[in-house]
Length: 327
Image (cartoon, rainbow, N blue to C red):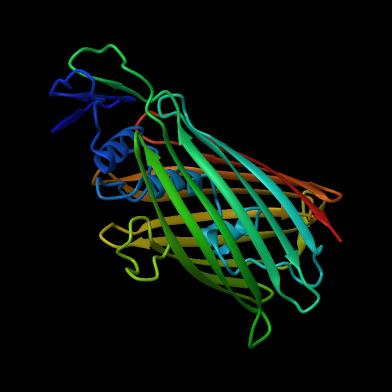
């Protein structure tokens, strides 16, 4: 059986015959590598796919519950993300994600959303995350070569207001793929989401990476729930602003639920800041992780920053985003 250390190297106890490449137990290696870096929420386990593990790193950089996401890449997290009648009819966004050097996870997400004349919001999202400097060894510490490791998703979706004022629903078809060493895995996912918004309350629910045939037992599949309470506009720091508190949870088969509690302030529609804490299970232990988010809007452009504070001594993971809106 392979032996995995706690860094970015995979060591094999059994020497490999000449002319053959050393092989890796793919699911176990992925879980050991990323969980060891203490980046993965909700207890990344050996049976989880590489794609699920890496996308949880990206999700950890959001201070808002995923089911209530409204940033440029919102359609990746909830299929119910819409562009309302008062919003621009086209939004383009790109985000980059960078983890500590100890884990080497980095990647980007590109998204486009457009509102049609009939009221539908059509979305397309492509994202890719990878682990760098992952090498293979045998009985000695000398590296025998790099091991490619990445996860990517391509998603197309449609959403619109339904039934009653404030209620929106959507669906998204996603193609997921992941590679570790010479093994490439892929599958389809079909997700659905609902949001309901009133002047001071917003709630949402969405599935994530749900396999149509196997439901929540598929690696990485989860149910996302979120709720937000927001004050009316009041004077804050010399301008009009609102204050919001939020709660979110992620539920996956065979894993302890993760929880997020956050609060935020929005000033004059031009500046937002959010802080929060997430309680998750890492390697069977419950841990707390800090969350931070900020956004600045100027004209048609919006710049955002997200930060996962890390855990067990490992540094923070950052997300940087730029979105442009057009009428």
